[in-house]
Image 1 (cartoon, rainbow, N blue to C red):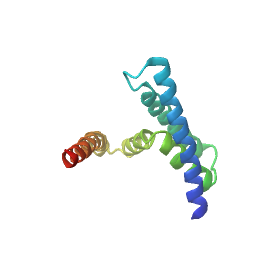
Image 2: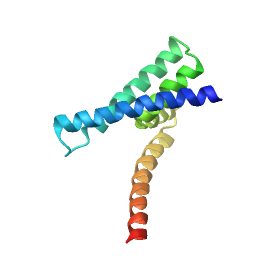
Image 3: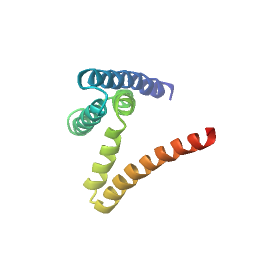
Image 4: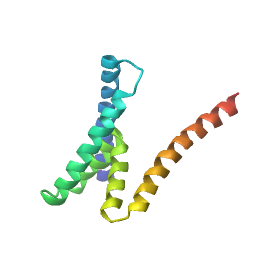
Length: 127
């Protein structure tokens, strides 16, 4: 258990640092008016997630620690969008079209609503 947590933490630290670096680099190159860095890491992270999941399923079976380091730790911190994308495609591959699109809709809408609610609660509480 401790080894699994260490693998996740190590990957997470690396992913978080690279995400921050990508955001800073994009802001330096393109300015702060649009979240180019976030779009970049979300698309890249989803691409990496897809490639690794297929590679791990068909070519090479890495250790559980390496899988946790890369998939849960690194990609989880680099972008949570990659996990969302994997969940969506997994539902599609199972033939669960309605649940897949429901999941996407609910995830996006409720996540944005949760963020708005969090802002509102703090603003109202400290106003």
